Image (cartoon, rainbow, N blue to C red; front, side):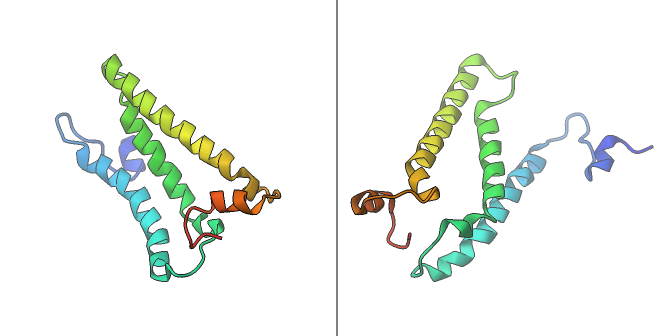
Length: 128
């Protein structure tokens, strides 16, 4: 009879085995996915970049951010100060992402902006 680990495509580690290679491989999937979508655009850095070009990258980036936040927060058996610091860092990042999204909301929703408001939101020359 097979264990559930075999059904998932990998064997369960034996007692005392190191699980770090499997965890590193887990982080490799979103990194490779993001880089494979992002690096080809570096050859065309003189061309305008639109946000919809990043659509195929976003799922990998979301998984990567979730994995990093989970690593920052730590396991539930971790000491309380360590988890508290991880929650503060991960929560601060989440707040910054939400503030950034709110900052670009007028562009995402095609609202009218003055020229100076538009220029405030165009951080790089290649953005349109």
